[in-house]
Length: 174
Image 1 (cartoon, rainbow, N blue to C red):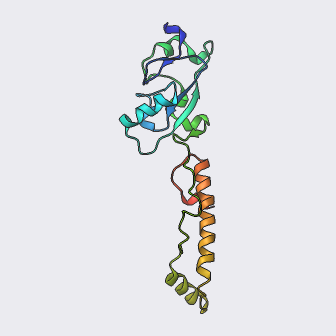
Image 2: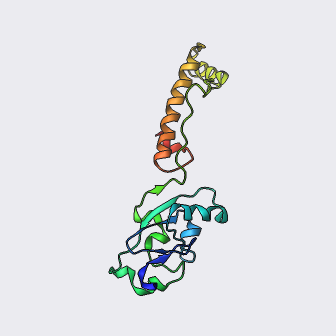
Image 3: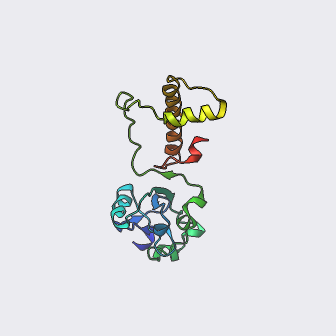
């Protein structure tokens, strides 16, 4: 049975077949040379999360080598977990694979439920305009500016979601 699979799943210990999809954790402590965890399915990957206690992790889909390929020799088949010579396990970003979000993105709340509060500090905005131009600021500017900020934030949220992140960063506003 040893030559019939490429590696064993780190959670359930079932064999991962040659050429089959498998998953590795995006966190470096899980995909390093010594640990090198690989998982046969998303549920197996999810079972390691409470033990690993990651803050933010994603499963990266990989493809096991084919049986006849040079990287799938007998030493890889018999190696223990963590001794794999696959370069993508050591650094998943170097192989160009796209990270997968662990949980599907939450459905946005309907706009009726999101409060339409003013997002700008009125006194700070009025002071800025007065110091910059010696002009006054109408009260109707604040709701319009808040709507513009909401649209910018919605676009940034989508960019972060497309990148598989759960954190909106400054680069998402560019």
